[in-house]
Length: 163
Image (cartoon, rainbow, N blue to C red; front, side, top):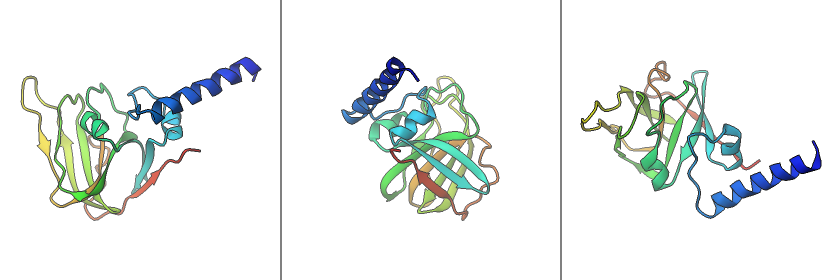
């Protein structure tokens, strides 16, 4: 790699890290997965031989935005919402454009699954869902992607590190 290109790449990575450090924690819909890994905003969720590479929503802002306004969601992608302590958290489908499976996880166990939750009809109140028992993690994936998963299954969540 020539010197100017490597300098450009290093400066780009440093600018992304600086933006993250000063509060730009939200990951754009278009941020490539490898940048999400560098920023520590991604994870892998595994169960029954399926692996989902997911964005991680930890801040209130990221949780409120979630996957809204996304025109598509690949079957192997999704979003993992992380909460400080287990609780009954209500999710709604405001501004959602694709149907979702919502997997409710406490510790490493699936405690509930809301399957094929549809986006709201035009001018209708968005659907709201919540688990039957407290959860610390909520996984949103494309509807049907978690069809083989069952309540009581163990889930392996691996958070990506900085390098």
